[in-house]
Image 1 (cartoon, rainbow, N blue to C red):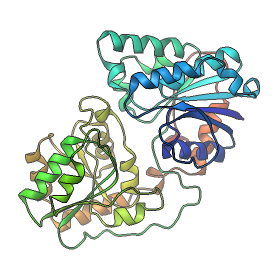
Image 2: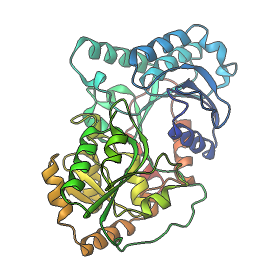
Image 3: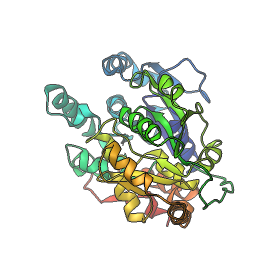
Image 4: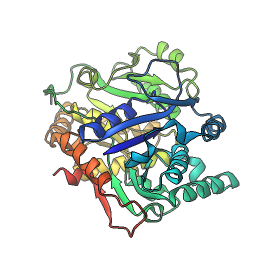
Length: 386
């Protein structure tokens, strides 16, 4: 199967994992999209332009600039079977290519439900109209969390006739042996906050937690701080001996080391509270649990629903520093050991994708009809590999 993958950020490691997954499932992938840095890419890709984080107007203009002669950039377009458009910007480009090659099946990969999409103002209504128009020619929709169904202003069944839920699990085509540790670490309770660090509430809460109980908690952070959201990040860390930032990391190579050094994985995110932050299932859920860390979640969110269903994790009742302190201060070593044992008891496939999931994804894509057909229900790749 020949496939074009249109992406909004070629610097995002998750995109390259998806490419690897598609290839492992048997697809021939042409990757094209926009780049946000000058860093070398892992392998050649068709760069359609350059954009910047958070600058929606600039990103929209870059998409418009790419439209003239877009089909000429893809000499094998007429032989392509499927176009996957990763997020709304790329869906607009995918719809243009679909008009040039009607036999191609267009698939929308919905990464999140942006606040512009879910609002009530003129801009939000315009965005929804653009999405609806572009989706008229789509055969399928990929999404990573059932929470997005609840958060999207339109029922998913109206967006595309065929749905596929594919969670943000790490990909392991040759799984390595994992370290096994169910006992809590000695000394302070170790909390890991990893990934894109952009939640002001989390930084304030963890800073206050450690300052109010010196020596009882230690927060270890790895990843990339979003300095546009947390301009004082490095100063806050430097001023608190119980906050530690270890810099960026490489997944999956560094994950075992990162999570072996903590007891708990901080999964609370209030960056888009009441919206996207409440609906998503973050990468750190899968990465942390795969490596034995106990997830800390906020009640009422999609990730809390998932951990509750699985019978794992520590749940904070409400988004307040007092609630966090009350829950975490009440944890004993016996509690930590019991929670870690519960995480370790889950099948590895709960947290990690393998060859079966790759094949299931490509099989789902291959079975899509060329034109919009009646809906046949949603596919869950977790179920497909069981």
